[in-house]
Image (cartoon, rainbow, N blue to C red; front, side, top):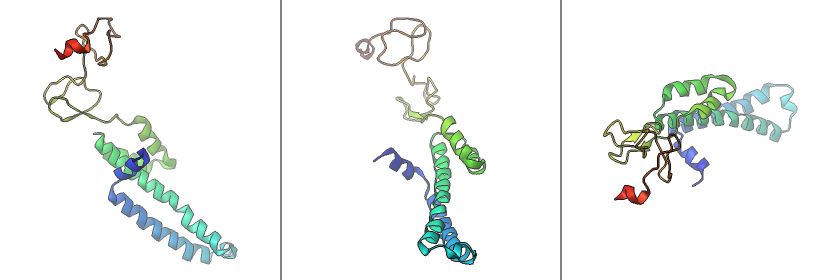
Length: 165
């Protein structure tokens, strides 16, 4: 499945229901009331009135689904999801949604010791104390598993074969 499909799957069913409800109600209201009562719009061809009425409210659907995505994504990342949902919904012109995508935390990862979800920035699991990432024996900073030397202090790191033994 594509990343877009995975993203759509994250959106809560409540957001889908609200989006569909508003789309059906508002677009039908626009087609049957607004375009029928406006003197200039009445002169448009029927397909033009339908495209206007049913097309313009697709933006509303996209906005509702994006706010739903922000809610669910912030919740699964362990962020303040209520605050981010309100910011995404109330800051005009989609700026709140853009801010969320710029400032969101990385996905938490499972602890290798106890399998609890730990924020990515933590060096040790707060539940069991297991190191989330290998660390340098000299300076204590996190290092990647394939590195030969610590980039912070230059200490030679043990090779993978030595660590496994």
